[in-house]
Image (cartoon, rainbow, N blue to C red; front, side, top):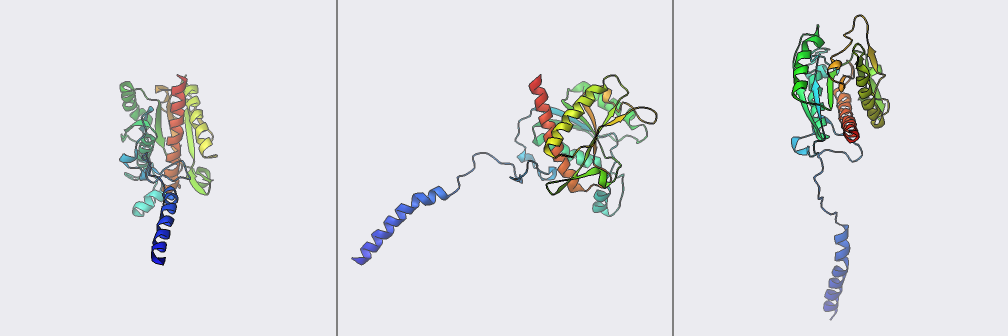
Length: 261
């Protein structure tokens, strides 16, 4: 009799606890979440994004190119082969352009990239016909000529939430009649960047007069921005973080522009 009572008591306890246990089990995810996305941050390193992770619908277009394609970062070249250099055939600004392209795509921006090697002397003049040809083929919401600047680490690095970021500079050539439109576009992107990481941008670099190009091919399109990504002493991690921020801010700028049209 005691044995039967024990069995019934156990059965009743199991039936009572079963619904409670079910409610404590986490429900399965119904939407695909991007891999490697940290819940506590809004960005993913470009190197960590796989093609299968890119699930955002296209909401704009961008073009990337590199007037000074061999510009390099000392810590990056040193980590690659032990050679400290500011110019490199492979470990250069185009490497981070590829990462930016991936990040822009991840944020819903259909992105093309021109990888054209032109002589450093007269580079803006040499690359101009290639950019012009591409712009004749397709209309872009944002065009970025990506560079690496020369200042040292103290001027090109910001610490935010205990993480280091490479700072961003915008060069505006003033020697064409519509430069204010390029300046307005730069200020729009600068504003969104500062909302994400306060202090990540430098003051606009306004260029005119003897010894400078003066236009930087920005007369070809009001959305053409010359962006300086960090400086010669920034590390790969710092650059990767900033690339992710640029892509997110660019997506917001493009979305806002589309909404206003």
